[in-house]
Image 1 (cartoon, rainbow, N blue to C red):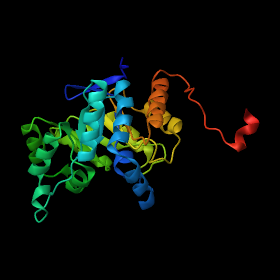
Image 2 (image 1 turned 180 degrees about the vertical axis):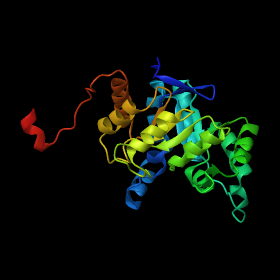
Image 3 (image 1 turned 90 degrees about the horizontal axis):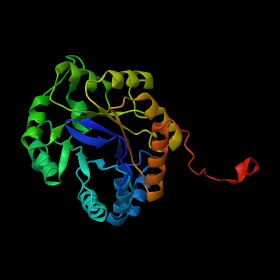
Length: 278
């Protein structure tokens, strides 16, 4: 029987507060090309489906990803195994200027997201941040894209690396239901200090999906997760990618402990230098 991981409500949809990330499925390590290649060589549809199955059985039934045929096949496989649907939060990249490939224009990309069963369509940072105008303090052309998303029966949100995006979108009262924002204790890929991002999340008018809590592997799971879980609101979420089923179980268990105000008691790694501590 599936565990009910703590949940929140986003745009009328119930979501688990822990979301499955996809960088460690699709080969975006933020470390090196060699690490990217390792991930791509390792992660088959079967392996990804096994990891997603662990999450689904724990009530973590939402995945964030770019449109990906490999991932969609793995999601369908995991859904069949568990008998539980997974919510897709897709982050497409599309042309915001003329001259690109026609199939990468906004409407075809949004059609693709709909075809791959997206509940949420959140233009990727490469799109969103290209539209942010710091001088005018606005996000240009945004209503055009959110309208396209709504017309296809999906829920709009914004993925960003810029803290200004959340501030401007709130001020403009734009038609989005949630934000994706980088947030971690190391400040990795964040454009301003962590305390600034903390305040922006606290003041956001919509729930925030935080990403990169472990700074792409630069923080220990308990360290990165303890920081993020203790400094976001009850309506906010943490997105985390894992490479194996054991990693998935570990981050679920640590998160449940932290959310219950317990010190995590997950088994510790053992090395020869720690022999004297046993």
